[in-house]
Amino acid sequence: MSQHALLRSVKGLGIPGTARKEDRKTKLKVATPAPEVDRHNDRTADGKDHFASRNGVRCAGVHLIVDLHGAERLDDIEHIETTLRRCVEAARATLLHIHVHHFQPNGVSGVAVLAESHISSHTWPDAGYAALDVFMCGSADPDQCIPVLREAFSAKRVGVNEILRGQGA
Image 1 (cartoon, helix red, strand yellow):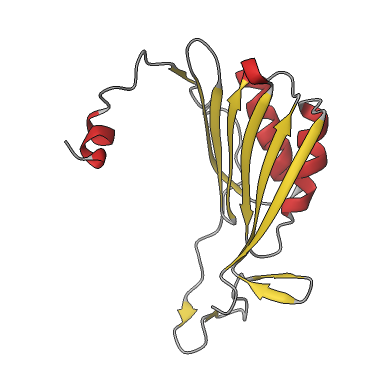
Image 2 (cartoon, helix red, strand yellow):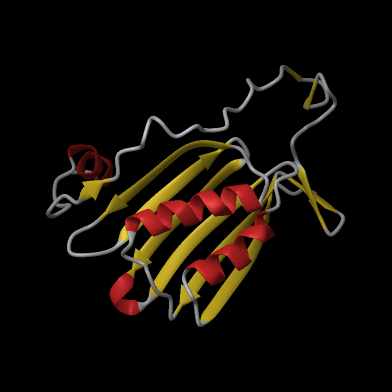
């Protein structure tokens, strides 16, 4: 059986966890439809290409790989969802969808899908460790997520690696 077939069949994934149902009453900021792109210069009609600039380098987006060590509240699904939402607000991004899933016996994975890309989180409460992925393009500011994460999880140590995606595109 190929790896893809295993993923599609959901076999071997162990005891299913509980997915957090999205509260439909929550008002989400809805992104406007993407403007038409001029294929000759890769820009929208309003002149924006939604690329980012970092230290004078033009790129498709800034991708932060974040490691939280000695962190707390890593099994608290509501706290994790609230923190993802706070990160979206701090970065001035546009939330399209959020989903968090609690694993048994512990651990939470979550993703905030953004008009500007995404924020994902995976936790290992027993180890006090969380791995996060913060990728944003356009004018959103992924750096604003770091102090939110540090404070929300009382992390003793925070590691951040940065990748400028799509340089030269």
